[in-house]
Length: 114
Length: 108
Image 1 (cartoon, chains in turn blue, green):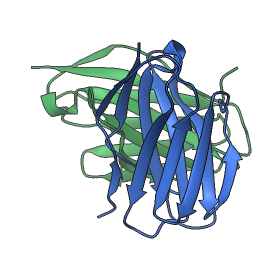
Image 2 (tube, rainbow over the protein chains, first blue to last red):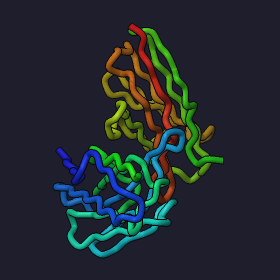
Image 3 (cartoon, chains in turn cyan, green):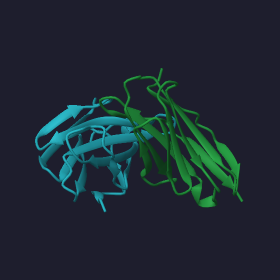
């Protein structure tokens, strides 16, 4: 079974703090993704990576950056957290060179920025 | 127009009946489609995928794809209370786009 884990289930931070969200997958997947999910807006893609050190902007990259130094690990960084970044953050991974393959999700991190 | 559109619901169905969830997409070049189920407070989990026109069955679930009309549907037969969840339709051409989900409630 594919296993995707995320570093925290719940996180509370203050405005202006630097926030790190980590995601690890154990199935040697090439592709990894970060989404945020908000009521009424569905899942929105922040960034994705198709290889180590490679990254591509998704639909809403503003205010975020990512890092992928190892194949199994994909980090999302909020350089200076703001209240409008309060959300559920979901990491996913998928196999192969195509962005169209099945994505497997981690349990999510519910981030609250005060 | 959103790339993948779903009726947000909520959709209420009696236990044992057939639940029908529908989705339309705008990109005619879309090739791959997925249905995910998401329980409240949990992450999405894959139910099934469909690439070809027609029906694909897996247990109580049937996915239907009609590329000419650009719609995808999911039928759940013999609905159970445990099927109560939000169902996400996912599709796309070069990358996957998620619909906003349909909330389904099965009434005992």
